Length: 248
Length: 265
Image (cartoon, rainbow over all chains, first blue to last red; front, side, top):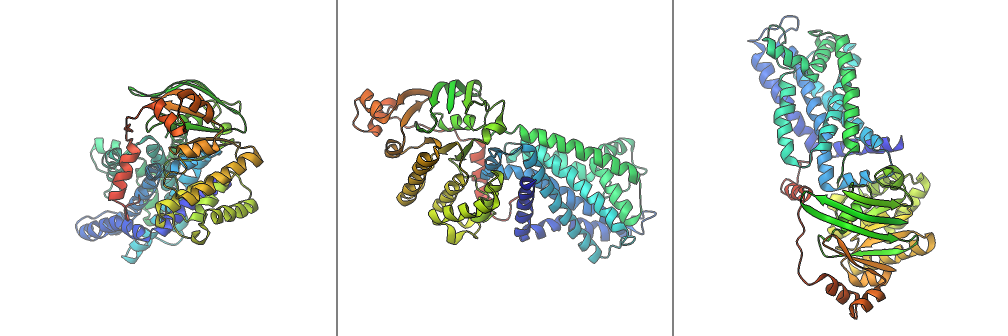
């Protein structure tokens, strides 16, 4: 338990110490929020949300969580490169605990980052449907964070260098984001796109969070929780397996 | 304490370690010498559960590192050849984290961290982030950290690389002290023959993945008719300079230097 805690603490400390990075990683979601949110607010009318800005804000929060959590997992690559990974790999601790500490740490900073994006959204004019929505929103933020932090750990365990990282970015992370329905409604889209969307884990997170914050549900809250819960378990197991296989 | 039989490790076409057999007794200080790229680090990585052997068997304190990695990890400590500190943490935090990973109880942990940081003259800088440290200070911190818990076997992979004579002296004095008082078995590699001569009871010389000689320093000198261990080493391994293949981690380290600030993740 102690081991999980110190490794969790390490991730959180590293995050809090890199303030420029916190601000820098707010930039991208903010850009989407302001450009798309304000830009399309007049043109795109989405029933049941009170404007495109209200619609896109939860998607932008998901974006912040997705990137932070998956990068924290891939941060393993940096630890490999700076050598710290070896220090944890030879320690007399089950690797499952090491992986758990790292993943929980990554998920925690992703939740913090998501909360920061939410606050920025609210400063920019986003209004959740009520404060009662917050606990439910946090549940979904937490689930998204764990799913993708674990996926990041699994990926980070198998990559050897940064070349692979570009591939992951372009062929995995960006598609996950764009196909998730974060930016546009799922209804009325073409069938192949709808299928792709339903295969995308983030779609369930976006749907759940949007349901909590602005009351627009396209898949269904209970199904969202179920799918995310199952995926979180599966990815944590996958990540733990991949992590236990690491050789230096 | 360590028993290695017909150990081999192949990376693609390259035979890094080829059919190596040796034994290290409990309580012994054993030096593993060889030119760059001879297979020293690869052997240590297999002994310390970081790499799986291609063939051959290893027994550490009666256990197989492939079958029971966790049990084996409980028995050794290691100072790596290349950096393994968390640069975004302070010196103290690095020590403390290590102590938790190795289950050193809180109170003892605090005392030992203080003793070791003072011994290696890092106590005044304990709250500084490691990334602000010079190369020598980082090296000292790695060594202090490696000595924080008292394992049955201590692996030292070129521990004195980049250390000044004062720190080197501290290190070997401390290692000898641990060996004599706690009976810690020490397995070390070094390029400084005088160190091996001074501290090691027995020496193995490895070249091109094969052990070319094994015995006490005096035996090796007698065997080659040389008057120092260094001369004996050169007679055994020749005078050509070796190249070491760079791995992807080295390439990335280089890239990281280019991208150093603000791009941590």
